[in-house]
Amino acid sequence: MSKVALITGTSTGIGLSTAILLARSGFTVVATMRDPGKADALRERARKEGVTIDVRQLDVCDQASVDACVGATLGAHGHIDVLVNNAGAGRLGTTEQLTMGAVQATFDVNFFGVWRVTQAVLPGMREARSGRILSVSSIGGLLGQPFNDAYCAAKFAVEGMMESLATVAAQLGIHVSLIEPGPVHTEFVASVRAAHGDAAPDAYQPLLEAYLGNTMARFSNAGQTGDDIARVILEAATAEAPHLRYVTSAMVQGLAGRKYVDTTGDSIVAMMTAAAFAKV
Image (cartoon, rainbow, N blue to C red; front, side, top):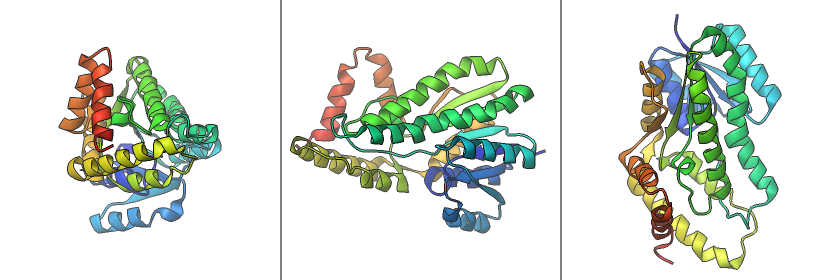
């Protein structure tokens, strides 16, 4: 009997790549997205690679949608062995710039969405005393980044939630893992840039332009692909003794290591300032 993997946010990027790779690796894949009308790219790649994908609607911001999808998946396949919390959305802006509505929307997708779906699959995993919950976090869940106040706050929350859950879940046979990428070449970056529409006082504009310029250069030079991250997710989904954290590149490992070594945080602020605003 093949293991069943439920993946959120699979219309593009990391989610799409993960759905294909897990299907190629023998999983029964339930690939979910808010709008199944955007599944053409996933279906076309599945056709080319000769795998079958069960595409279903799931809006992580809608409790009824979450409950319906999880219930239908259990009805169709009998169990959910692996959950990949991948759906997410970025939002550029500082605390002064972002409206409370924008902050709440960012948390709804990136944190409460993870909470809703995880909470929905846990009863079945608990009863089976088996399962894996893999959440795609970010280097932004470990290190705060300029103009990412709301996004990083939400990802920090995911890190805290999963780290807290991991110990208790392990007593029930459920493994919890965090996947922590740095720059990734996906449509996510373009959507983040398009999402910074809140009012920007003049004082922030040159800083934002410098940040965007330096960030895009860094993405070009050091970014991974969705397929790269999918391979890390596959490792976490199949390892006999999965880790709590999977950093996806040497660059991210170095950044994360700096935080753990410097408990004051001063070197992190200095590093981020130099990286983001060197051209100001």
